[in-house]
Image 1: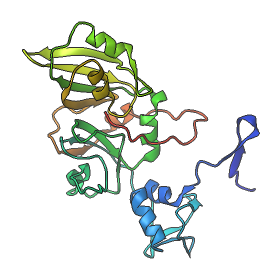
Image 2: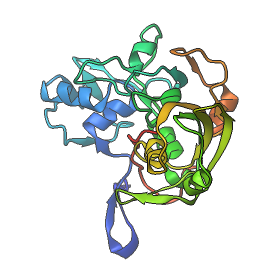
Image 3: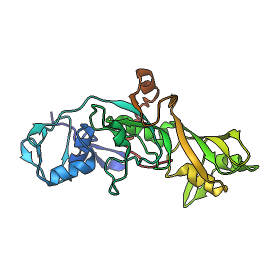
Length: 270
């Protein structure tokens, strides 16, 4: 029986089997390296698929069926790992930084891990809970806005909240053509000149909290993510990383949406 490589969707359009992906993505899904690193290996003639050297990054394969080798060594699927990192301020959330800044991967050097990627991002000035995994489908479901996974932040601002400020954050506003909104916002504590807020989001738009607060006249002094989908940072030291417990991982096991196809992993940050 011929394998169903394509299927018909709405309107009679044909959609490619979601198991078939680009070769760089296949190497990433197998936990071997990042897509950027894979492209270098491929164009350098170091990757073989079913015995043939492949130099085109546009080549598409089924990673579960194709025999992929790098430098003559077979590439097999790595064990799935699910991590939490307490990201310190000042690190960028990327594997390879053109500016050679310190990255979150510096915190993982002492661990024996397959290639893992961040589940979403925290910008350089932000800190706190960052998830990492080599399970790309799991990461995509966690990040899908339809999954409604809430993220909780503690945010220090440079002023005391004026009357109506929190209500405006929760009402939402259009900034640079995007509708930004906080699921909830409340004051944790206030001093003479500044205050700490707790802000909950259920979407991930670029620098969302900083943009929202800037629009209501507040500057962010510190931004710490403390919770993702009920998984809490708690007392994990800054710069430390650990595996999620089975219970924590289960809290983030969002069911795949029927007919959704492959989802794009967001690169946006709070």
